[in-house]
Length: 372
Ligand code: ASP
Image 1 (spheres, rainbow, N blue to C red):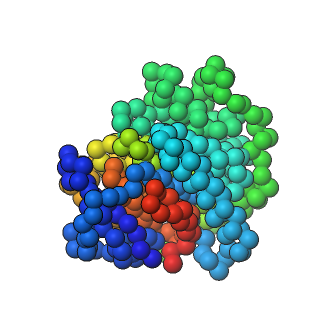
Image 2 (cartoon, rainbow, N blue to C red):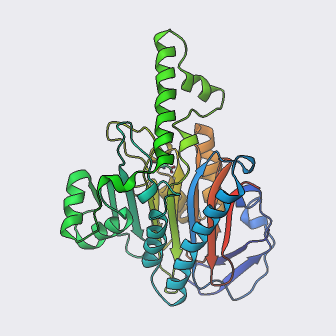
Image 3 (cartoon, protein in one colour):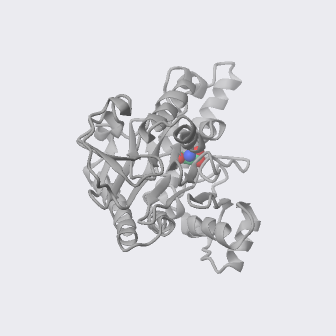
């Protein structure tokens, strides 16, 4: 597979297009950017959008062709919605929001309609969005009745003086803003309900083992490098998008139901600006997916942008350093989509699969699920 990458010299409009770069598994570029062959051309994508549908343990052999087709079709549809907006001169924020609304409405993903269940059998949704031009950001958490959390996050950003709202207060704001609310039953899907049952059973077994003085199963599994049910195995499906518009503005957004069997009002990285989502026109736009606690501790999305800005790393180097370096060292599973102001897209992940795709003014849509 070949991949196209643009780099823009600081402050200048002149662009270098690096064509035919060899990609490793997971769409991660091999080696330092400086070592890559570069063919100088003065053109590059005018706009670009990338989306993810979550990182997880799914392997090709464990996924039916039918399900693979449904995931691919859904991501392609989200990219097409983004393409339409960006190609006609629309904003990156509009493209991110529209693409994510579409995925929130699909029962396939762990966001909106298909959100996973909490320990108590509820759905609690989190989302965030960020504007790379102004660093304005909006985030919402613990929503139970908002059909499209990404749109409420945008409203927080644009119609309130705040960055983050949670729970009942956030839903009051949604009501005030005319955002669509739905009964909690709207979020019920049999598949996610069964996931919760499996997670609770596994938890029950672990507690019984703990009671018997044995090492808890999840800790033993973790030490053996195996993820317990209820963690990675049930996490596939968070969605995110990053976009660059014709005006050179970046935006990023992420939306999720969090982790199956979460309790005590647990909130992951997806609605945390700097952890699951970040955008800064000077550096990059990032949306992450994976074990949220690790993304929060490492401020993953911001760290990638900071590496680009301060260390002058390429998008690929910065995203790799964090996802394949820092996170792997700590045992934090997941991946990111990252997009530079000049159209560079990096999509590294350290899990067996990550639903991901992109389309630019020059190529795509391309959608991939597995490592190879
Ligand atoms: N990062 C999300 C969370 O921890 C879950 C995911 O991306 O799969 O809530």
